[in-house]
Image (cartoon, rainbow, N blue to C red; front, side, top):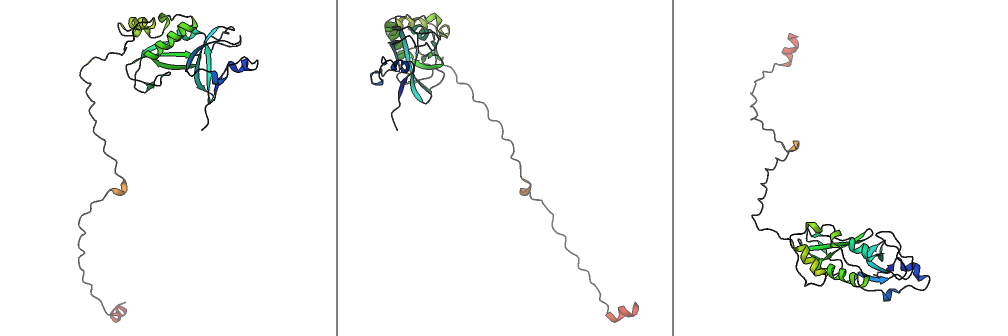
Length: 224
């Protein structure tokens, strides 16, 4: 099976002018910050143009049968965050591809209609990179779900974002009796097919033996 081609949606136009980066020089990270090579790049979140030389966040996504890079302003990317706790064990971190367990804090960032989830550890690292390279500070007050975090988790996360020590943020599940299992209802009787029904019959009555007296043929003809 051939290698998946990585296509830079905005850089395709720039390549015609000879100013585009080649795929070999493209970063291996799934999310990165670069300068726009021209003024034709468009933020996929707000729809406005990104000026030449301006900072932009690129996120690699799978769309249209290939891997492409979609761009947005650093501020638009930071403000798109939705934060909460994982409600199952099926999720994976977009950056590290590690499992996100049920109850773990996770952050969702979006570029236009494309969205992905990060574990708290990887999300903090990405936010710091965007903050350093893109020159934008995260405004956690705009993050959807920030008010629903458990007590103390918001303060710990905000301290972590500005360089504090990493912490484990997981939803606390109070210990208690497990909910009683629902009693199984009695199974409904299975319908019986008509051909399976046996009709009970009584004993066949004995046929009484009747003695029949035969008359000679001659007698019959004379009497008639």
